[in-house]
Length: 442
Image (tube, rainbow, N blue to C red; front, side, top):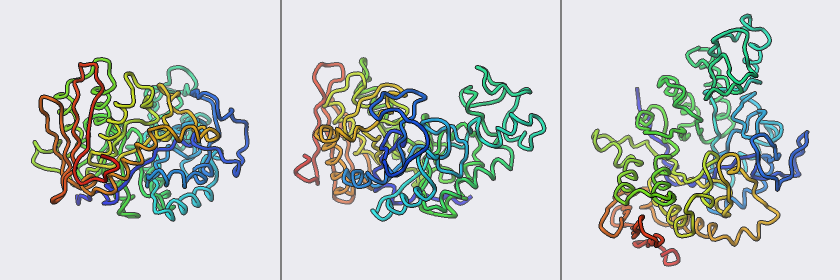
């Protein structure tokens, strides 16, 4: 099989992840129904009514931050606020807007020189998905009886324990039978449909649970046939090499990197500097494939510190300005593409899901704009833009008695991050950037 490498633009990308129900609710679009007050605290069920028009209204805000690629959590028709319970893969959720709203958003994103990727949930659907609903109505006589993994009839879709396979045993999320050719063709057609509407790639939800390389190989062929520059990134929390041989994904959400940073900077019993450097090396392809003597050039990770699945930076144990500044600097220093979770640039707080999915308080934005995280992220984005070594350069990690250094080098130019810190001590971490950099961020 011919192996295709990741699109070159991803190394220049800075992603901005948006949880659409909580980002912005524009009055320009009126959805039917009643929604909670925008300043309410999130629960697993409540709906705030954020919409695509709200994202469109804030494109200038997003662009002014310096990010250039949007990553939207699921936007397809669903009966959940997070929309990982897909009812219709070919329709925009009516709370969010219409296909026309989506097409206009894509055009405006591209007009600004930005890109947009969508979240694809192909392992499971919702109980409200038409083909699964057919099973509830027709039982064994449904023409879609082989689309799911049924253990016993009749289906118990609203009991605590389902009698069919579902994601993490949640009855609301029946698992597709992806060995069925019809199911495969249906899911591939979803990928193709949205590519043809102009998106720039896919973030794939729990793709490891479709434990079938041939499925993702064919998905890649279908997507790349429409846009060879599409970026395909998988949500893989563990060792990712299997998926990154050039025939499935272009990269993964780099939770290995995040886990290392959390264990070093934000745990009450932190790992040692030596252990951190070892884990950091394992998080990036420059080191990960060295033992095998190969390095798939297409492995471009999406590096992140926060997402809709994690506690926000400001609410982590041991969080303070020095540690968060260092964590952000590490993210922008590493190979791949950094990803900012919406609101982190404003210092939003939030504990475990669903508290980490609070709304951006646009009415009080002037107060939040003064938060140091926004200027910090802006300067790190500028640093990365003005130093090709941070996007294309080699990576070396060197440890000594006082701390460690990260060096990114390209031709005769190099940028160095020097960190001095005793994780067992009481003093905050101290770090400095040196090399071919603008004086304002030294």
